Length: 551
Image 1: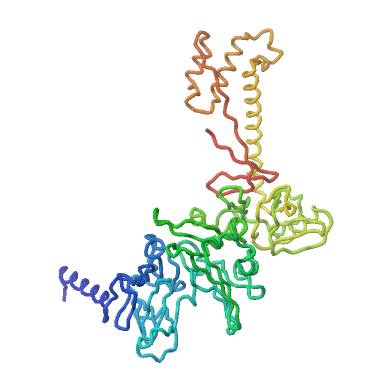
Image 2 (image 1 turned 180 degrees about the vertical axis):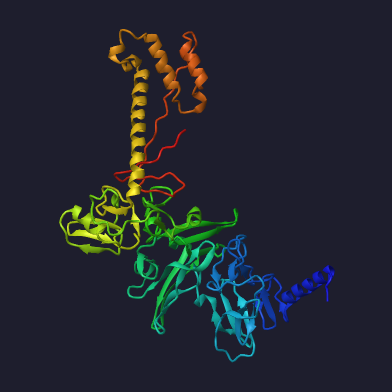
């Protein structure tokens, strides 16, 4: 049977309403509780009794993935402080409700995605969002008994009153874990937890490498954390036979604060500015981006004294340019051109070569081999298909066969600075030799302009004349040529004459010529690597310099 257009629209409306209403009543926005006969969906939220925190569905970025999270009500950007289902996103039409004594998230097909997962004999439970940001599950007949709480399962944010510590009975940590990136709350590379061996807090990369420590608790604060925190916060560390944990509270009860582990790997403290309605960064650990292990990802170089902090090593390009555009570098860089496996001779003109990257720290995950001269290191590396870089020290050669991680730019005066020799395709050097030729030409032009300007400024421009022309050359015509030449290389294009004007000025001795200003000189900078295939590259190595663009 054919269905008319109006009937199809009616059926769609009925289906939508059924999906919205389900068989239960939806929670009305504003209450702080989800009871057994209510659901929370994409159209509703609950708010803590004092109006501090909100529990609801959110979507980071413009995508169809939704999560159940908690955020401060004053924050219009909804910067979430806790997430229930960070590893299992759902659609907008999913819902949260009480089921079998638990708070359960169901997708639109009624499949359970996330649950508080407690064993409770109570016939009546409720979920309540508290003014401290803690979501709790309680017994209806005994509200003081907490069956489950979100503070036991932190995601990436440490709120005042929460406890980040170590359970000595179950041998488990409460851990903060960064997001994968700013658009995806999936657990990322960085984590923060208590080191139970010395009662310090540590930041870890990829669950394996510690790159920052708070130092042990001194009785008032942690050794490596600035003591000024005590001015605005009450800090407390507790250790007993059951657990060890750290917590904090704000001295000014009207202040809104949060500590979260950023995707950058830094632990950041933020305070809310009510006047401007935004978060203000109050401090971060570690203080410098490049102190975070592998901040720029693989095959890149981190430099805290240069913007952007991250750039790909010469011969490499961002793995995902879209992420680098968002200043998210953890996926690092990949090689632009393949190497020649099995080329074991430096005399092979078409073979791979090595590029020196000076004044850097050496990456980890290396292999050592005792050999003599540094030339032996290069030959040995070329003989191994897996070798991508080498260095040399008093003990011999050091080789790398996997991605280069945590390479940081240092200074010549730094005792830890070394030279790293990275393996590149011969075609990379051909391109750079062409660049060097252009650079040499431009340098010569620079020197000529500098000399001409200095002599002009000192009224000695005639010294530019070749001595062999001194008798035959008209000095006034020569000075006019120098004047016009300096006008042609002015910094501002508005000060430069057009070619017809140049011809006119040189051909008419009576035409007035303006006095030139200091001409434009090409400036040279020396950061140490290339950026992306679509952008000019930079280098402080012995083969490349900054690309120069025309004015």
